[in-house]
Length: 359
Image 1 (spheres, rainbow, N blue to C red):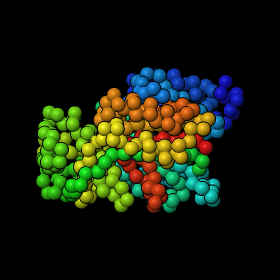
Image 2: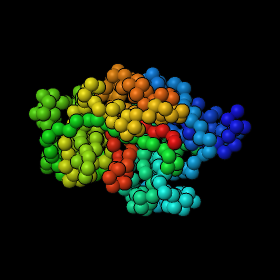
Image 3: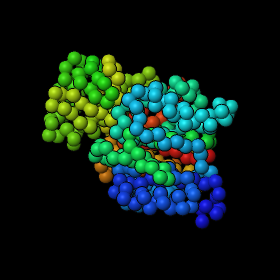
Image 4: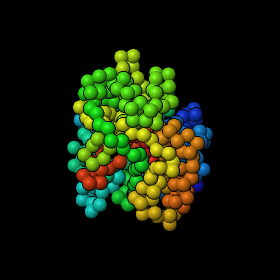
């Protein structure tokens, strides 16, 4: 029915990890109708009423935007950026002449350890011709799983990109308060922090949590507590949330997202739902617009859900009530991407809510 009404249509499919065995038949259906299909697998889906692990979101574009799927990304960010630019070269001439910028929406495999560096390298090549938004896909277990796909492929360690119209509106917010303490990642590479202030990162992390918040962090309770006390990487105009997700026997910490060597850090305390300004910030960014006939596309950080627990569903309901009058669809994400408005630069976050609405 869609194909007959919208001949130039395409589909983006959001699939929960639990339903990954259904992908081949969905790809076959798209091939049978000659409909472009792209998408990703996530830990769960977002609905008006909360999170679900069954079913699928099938999102129709009346006209399929330019898109690409790049697999097996190199460790060198500049090489990845060159591949992305090559994929966009046919669409970019029109972009460079446009009076307003389209949004490059990127979905990375959550196992890619250097998304922030790749984003910076992409911007070097694209020179401010696009705005950025995006998320990480994959398994909430943080185990490798091919999670990006098109009509015929399922790939891992890659990136899916769609060039959305300039009329697309986006908001990426976390609403986390920032502590006063500052310390330095004196040895770090990618998403691994080895030393903080010259000492094993886990040891210092324990001490700061104890001193700031009176909480005793141990190896045994790490996975229960760390999500509530993320690091904040001090950037030029903001503090970027980095959630610790693993540790090593020698005292190193692994985070979702890169932590540059010698960067200044702060310890954050994830807020209660009453303390969080996230929904209000999203409403402000979207001008409180509930009149759109298009649903809100919303991605919610898995670490944020771990922190809020049952209150995460309440936050989704609040978001729906305040800014998603036409309905809400989306997925649970493993990292989030936005654009630093002041400088036009892409950034990689944790703990955020990502909202997009078509024009």
